[in-house]
Amino acid sequence: MHIAAINTGDLLLPLWRETFRAKTTDDKSMWAWAVLMKVTWKAYGSLITDATPFLQEKINSGYKAWEWLLYMYGMALATLYGILPEPYWLHFFHLAWGLHLMQQHHISRSDLVKGHHHLLNFTDEFEELYYQHQIDQLHFAIIPMIKPSLNTPPKGSLDLVQGYILLFHPCKSDTIIQYLASNGIHIATAPPITRWAHLCLPNGQENVMSKQPRMAQNMKVIYFYFNMMIHDQQKTFMLVSQFSQPHPALLEQSFQMVFPCHDNTDNSLRLIEVLLRLGWAH
Image 1: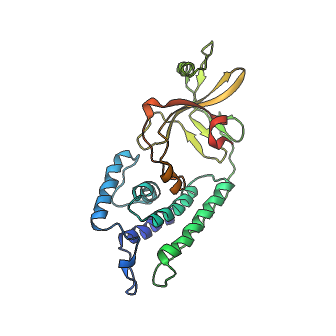
Image 2: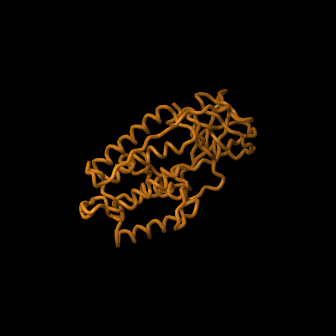
Image 3: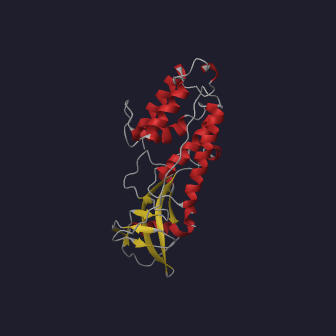
């Protein structure tokens, strides 16, 4: 954690600020990546300050490891757009993609391969963009060490199919019946519905419901999951409110890590059938 957060942050940010120690033979005026200086640095600081109401945690001046993680691999991904030259901004996402993966408790083999690819790209491109194969500049490499773990579904969970597991959090209500009816699904009776708080994914991660959605959550707010018999077939749904579609160019350039969206929460309630309509269900 400290290597990914404090050590890496203490390398890249001084490079971007042109405060990193350089040898006398290294001309800092040739550092194309050194852009966070003087007026730009002050304006950038104000941008980060303005973003703090949207964070679940408060960032202090003396950054701890988790604060470096939040800044480097959360806030910096979007806030450096248009400031850091594009080749360096895009290069940074290789590192962020790999380290996002390394912070997960469970990682699929396919994601592990992708993460390894991104980290190798980051190392190779670092030599070309920063180190430039010059002995008086810098070089480092990141090698992830990850091993799989086996999980037993917890007591009270409901095993679905294809590796999906509902984790127990019961709350009976018939309000979902009204919502189903407004979406063209009509049921003669109103049986009690069990709300599920979490959905365990095949890769071991959990999708979590949100009782009180916070500004720091985006893209999709999950209210709860539930099962219901429809036309003699049991189906699993989640009730969500969705944001707008992300900006396509930024989404592609950032390797699907930055999702610039508009908040349409009040007008975007919808049901998603978990095993049929989620992209990661297949």
